[in-house]
Amino acid sequence: MKEPFARTEIKIAVIGGGTGSFTLLSALKDHTSQIAALVNMADDGGSTGVLRDELGALPPGDVRQCLVALSDSPNIRDLFSYRFEEGSLKGHAFGNLFLSALEKMTGDFGRGVEMASEVLNVKGVVEPITLTNVTLAMQNKAGEDVHGEFQIADMDFDGERPKLWLEPAAAPNPRALRAIETADIVIVAPGSLYGSLAPALIVPGIGEALAKTKAFKVYVCNLVTKPGQTDGYEVSDFADEIERFAGVPFLDAVLFNTEKPSDELLHKYAKAGEASVLYDQQKLHNATYIAAGAKLLSGSIWQNANKSDPIAASRTLIRHDAAAVSNAIIELYEYARQSRK
Image (cartoon, rainbow, N blue to C red; front, side, top):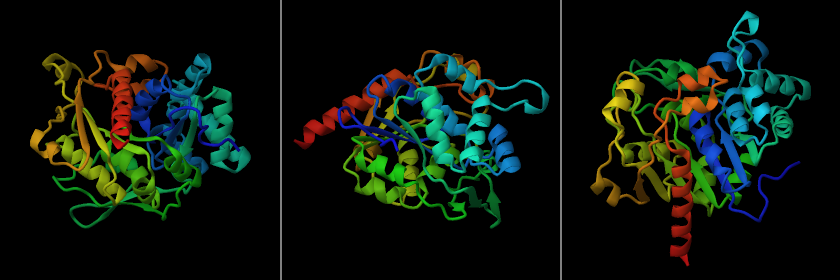
């Protein structure tokens, strides 16, 4: 079985899923081939949700995006991102169907991901954060339990910070734990705070692994707030939630954007209620982690990079400059490494 990392380059583990991970992974592979994408497994919307419901399959969508990001085969990348536009397969991405077929054929989703990695000529590895068939759950303000990542990701939390859990209790993927333990850098990617990052970080054992690893651990903060969920959140609030999910203070650094999107960009591409994530210099100065601000805003809209997947593209409006983010992470890592000497 392929080991998560070789020993000749910087070893990077990226925690997240969806378009945030896709964007970052696409640039990180220019720095090293030793990348492990650790993917949340609670997605239950769109094509993924249908496959989960009808086949009992584990969610392929975010795994597919990470595989595509790390692929060195352009034509196969496009094939895996292709969505059918008509008939009974309308809305399904070919890659989702392919991964579900491999899972059914082998009886092992992890093995199916390995086989898809070979087909895509992936630079690095993609590992599900758990292989348990989990559902994201929370309790709403009325005391009622709400189930499903798709439903929770679009809820209004009424200013509260929700308690989230997974059903059934998830077992961490040992290979994901190993990737965290052996990494030089662990990155929590930008993405939906409660729909993408929380389901990865609340898996039992992940927080402990993050606390124990000697890796340099950095969170890349989101660019904009999510209406009804992170309204008014500053950089420090996002970082606090990341550590709350993990159950332990583990961050060595938080990387955030200092460049305000233009009014034109916000008007054209921001969804209703979205706003730039602000930051308080004093709060960040007093934080236990390095707070590193830089101009990280992309001058173009990321959706143009993935035209073959219109559904994914519709979720990716104002985006990070992936090259700037990856360069900043490497610089932070080198700075921290030199400081430790």
